[in-house]
Length: 136
Image (cartoon, rainbow, N blue to C red; front, side):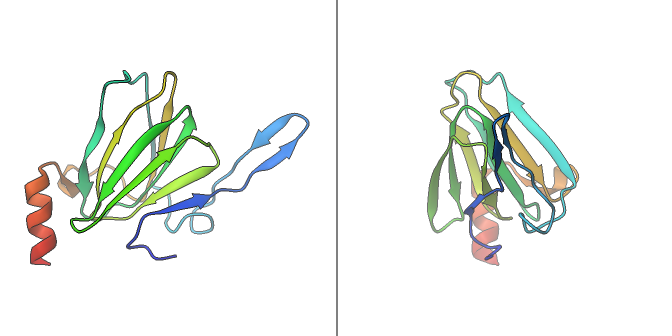
């Protein structure tokens, strides 16, 4: 897997008469150890989340329920995704500006992260993010 490019990952899905189960294993289904898990929910349909990038952190973003749109920007190219299946995860590499919007009612955005929270890992101003990309 190219860890410099975003990618939809199809996660395992076990189905029987009782329903479905999806599981995720670090360094097996995703390319990193999971250090933090968080989720977004009760988001008004007109709100936008994200609007930042990470210097080192990698993520898998999953629509655990409902749907939402994600736009990723590496400073050169934009990638657009609609997540609406709980067995698909979007791999988001480091140095990727992300904006999440168009949340359906009742949606839950589940995020698996490669690092513990570190406020110094964030770019919160797009111009600072772009400046560092073109310096590298």
